[in-house]
Image (cartoon, rainbow, N blue to C red; front, top):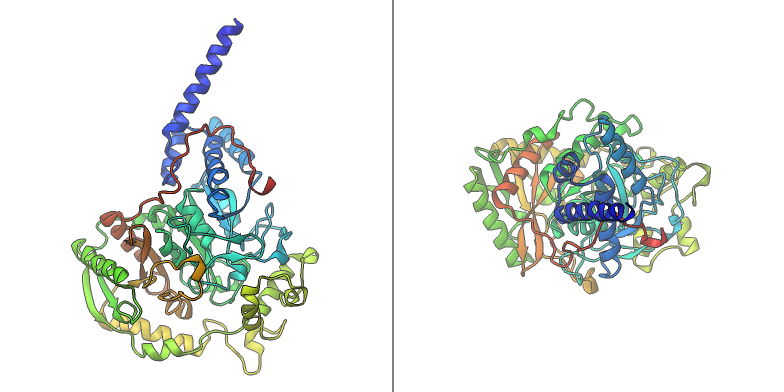
Length: 529
């Protein structure tokens, strides 16, 4: 009898192991996870364990350093989902989806440092709006990801709290900044998708460098509540994913009105019910696409990137798009040279730190200058971004620096972009997200060039996405940026999906393949947890 039980146990474990090995974690989508759960081939614990295994197996040994901390509660949340599946309970749209979250999103159960050692022990009292929405949809926050300190750098992802993140496609190169941890972690399949933030570049730039889809939405369509700020009326938070469909699924959950973020009054009632409804392979047919040559054929553009862009235009034509070339934005040079930003980091941080309550580690972000709790790389950034009064809103300064959407320069820029699109009768504008490949880690600052993401969307508040358009020099990703009118996210998803499905440029980084080991017995070990 005892021997029979042992044989039966061995058989059950063998079957479980076989199922686990048949599930491919590399490049898995949310639909893949749901199919595996519904078919009974995998449990949620096995899914989450598999991703934790990947983090523990690869992140530190390769020196990718994308992950700051694994959520020690992820497995218990997975167990709870398994119980609900057994009972036939209704689950949220993202059930058991393991999500990587940038280290500037408040998480009540995990530290939120913003890349600063000064906040290393910061445990916020509640979750950021988007984190709560993800959890309400039964997604699992599997880990937090490294970021550029205070989100200052678009060049690289280096924090005083957790160190430097490398590019998953080439460990000697940058993932850009500041959401480089989310980008490299998602590219390496440490989670099914991730969350980043974008003040000027930091979703779209890292997405370009890691062959991901990333979206910066219309200012006001999504909440920034509980996300450590950089420039309050430029900041956007949102998804980064390996597929457009997965990003749309996340966007469905996180987009929309939030009474805690007054900026979302602008977009109240303007989100679409379901952005996956617009995912059509033939969506490019008849779409008029403007080529913004001034962001393509630049003096320092890398010829390999330019060649990819030219091929992308041909691919768009083949998919039925109508190319409008040349396309120009009225007064574009003047707008590019204008100072359309307020130095408001200190004030925005003051508001954020107050939200942490009496236990906030600091009361004024400029305290770190006195304490020395910063890396030398960001001293200039602290001096620049931290300039200004502590508790005076930019609108109330002398002279005032009016907040979006009441900033005159930004409004004129937006008007000229939209009017030019109207005059050319184009649906969207395209250009490379970067005109140069990822720089080396050793020369991240010296070789920073070609960052197109900073130029239009942040100042105008218009939405833009980056989608993979191929690889240069063998394995260095490049992204195609697509910009649209206010609240045209449905169109951006449609165009990006059609381009994705007609080209299928995405491929995983070779250094992070499947690991051949059982997944159901994973332990949380990253950073001692």
